[in-house]
Length: 207
Image 1: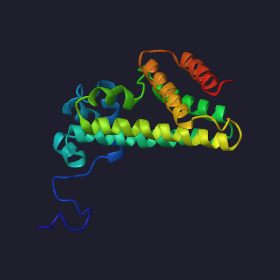
Image 2 (image 1 turned 90 degrees about the vertical axis):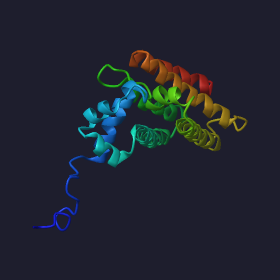
Image 3 (image 1 turned 90 degrees about the horizontal axis):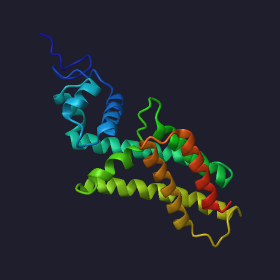
């Protein structure tokens, strides 16, 4: 009899890899985003990813490990999206671009208004889970640092006075981002969020 562990795909029998890990994690993220960690069951994840429980455990570990992977992936993608918008030449355009990119995510496209995955779910779990709390703190820190770096650039370019406290201003810029996420989750329409983002930029920069 032919040894199915040799040649071909090289996979042991009984473990066909009939899934894409990236697609599975994307679907798991959407599931956690809707119900949070505590409100999501393994059956929910199995249904969303079209994987059975043994396959889920083999690919991602337990439910908590899968949630943590989803948070990390979301944070990495969000960082890239914000950095791209902050590359704009003028600081007002950079900030507004970052906010608009966030609103596009927070408002969703199917009427569910998911808000921010990190803010909407991790703030609940952070109180009792140190790993989630660490990821939440890291996510906030990264956004603060991205805004601060862009503000420092604006100071160097002469857009802002060199007396500006870039760290504090960056934290306030992050606060605007968070209120957009919370208001989106509460059902505030995108047009209103856009107006709030524009007002936030004006107030932040004293325009």
